[in-house]
Length: 137
Image (tube, rainbow, N blue to C red):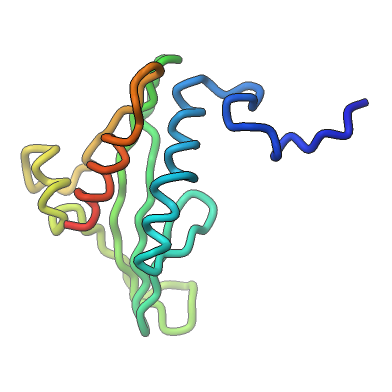
């Protein structure tokens, strides 16, 4: 029986995760999360949160429904909630239309998620850079 902690293995060594999802997870943990932390966001499970007084801003990456093994597509939901004491939240509003660069990616003001894709064999830096630029408006 191995005493190795599975969480300490490199991202590429995780069992049961497609190579493209491994790239996505690595990009999120090594590039996106530290950059958002510089702006004051805190990572909570799958989303990033920024609290300012009675308001909570959220940035939540969401996988597309079907991803082939060598590609991992995802969108980002932007939102804000009024949270005087925490859940239950009084209201929550999606802010997709307020992020101009994300809106350019969808081509409309419908509020649907802008989408990005990481691919095996291609650098993730440009994807992370575009995601951060679009999410910052």
